[in-house]
Amino acid sequence: MNKIRGEAELTAGGKSYRLLLTLGALADIEDGLGLADLSQVAARLKNPRAADLAIVAAALMRGGGHAVQAADVLRLNCDLGALVEAVSQAFERAGLPHNATDAAPGEHAAPFPGTPGSRSG
Image 1 (cartoon, rainbow, N blue to C red):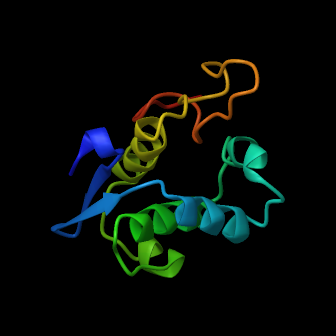
Image 2: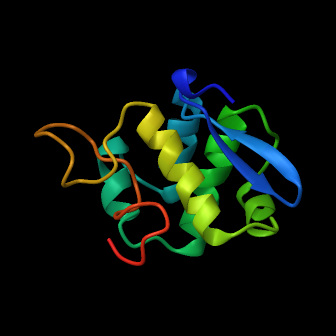
């Protein structure tokens, strides 16, 4: 895993997955969540459904070179907190602020309010 390159890591079921926010991953996230543009991503993920998390995680995993779909993510044997943390790290390492309160005017926020492992946003 290369943090400088923006990669995050998830370990699930004894396997390591690389997550990377690429242009293709962003397009997959927009399409998978049915959004008109990227400005809607943070708002949609403030209160995500399990399916939303799976769509985003799968897109980031494909960005990292893994051939996975959202249904595959839903079947992973992993801690939910670890999955949320890896997704959040992928956005943060791509240079996006963690949440809307950290975003400067005009910046887009990364998904999932709060801190990795926190109980609230």
